[in-house]
Amino acid sequence: MTIAGVVREFDADRGWGVLDAPETPGGCWVHFSAIAAPGYRSLAAGQRVFFRAEAPGQDGYPYRARKVWSGGPVEPPDWGPDGDASGAYRSTMTIAYDDPPDGATATG
Image 1 (tube, rainbow, N blue to C red):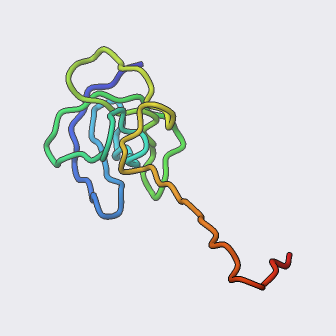
Image 2 (tube, rainbow, N blue to C red):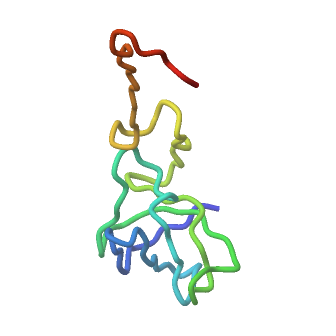
């Protein structure tokens, strides 16, 4: 069931906050990973959102958000780590070996 609510608070540094809606009395805990959006995921206090929630909650709140989105009641597709993630979450590493100096042998 889609729930319409409002962001009570969201701490972007800690990556979590609380949503309020009549269907989730006492508040609904939300983690940034539940936000259906590409790139950096954050919410703003007072922002109108739609979400799906489950009980039991977390960290003293009776409900926990499973998915949160804005822009309308139609639920967007899930954002997965492959293909939808921002470049900010990717890293690469290149290892290059030098040739051993003249007369030295490589050991292993």
